[in-house]
Image 1: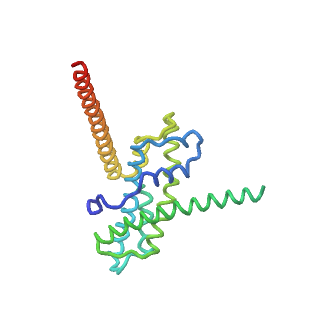
Image 2: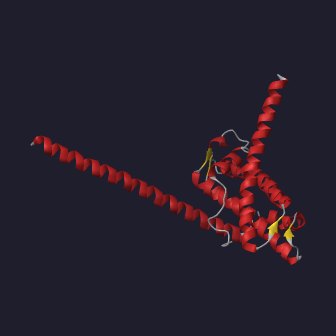
Length: 83
Length: 138
């Protein structure tokens, strides 16, 4: 996980909009704390990076030249179970 | 009236499309970093699939966060709720817990720096004011 460091990431505003788009309760529609948005951005980043890295590992195990949807599909079940 | 509902539906749809596009961009950047690090290329379909996946996972996350906060009788979602999201994998939970402490620490330091700056500012303006008073009394 150290390889992908302070590079790309999810912007706080995007995270906020993504969450608000799916809130059902009118009372929550207000409020996600700033710290939580930053933490959620981290969580989403890990989700993406895990998906990518696991797919790469699968492709390497299969001696594939690039990472295609087939490899991603194989790592999907465990990824979703881990999250 | 039907036209209004249709227009609203269109708006909601295009908003969602814009969100998805923003996610897709960030996912693309992250995958690019992984690709460079592991020296492996991703197909466009793979990046699109991860992007779609992330977008849908956000829906689950949002609903869970809402429920956790409500369960704790709060209307604001806080970091404890986010940590609960990471409960299924021990290493993930540890990483997120460490990150949350790091974030809290950074924000505490940032607030302390801001406070010190404004205190220094007040101190300077007070000195100037006192100097001014002394001058005029002369």
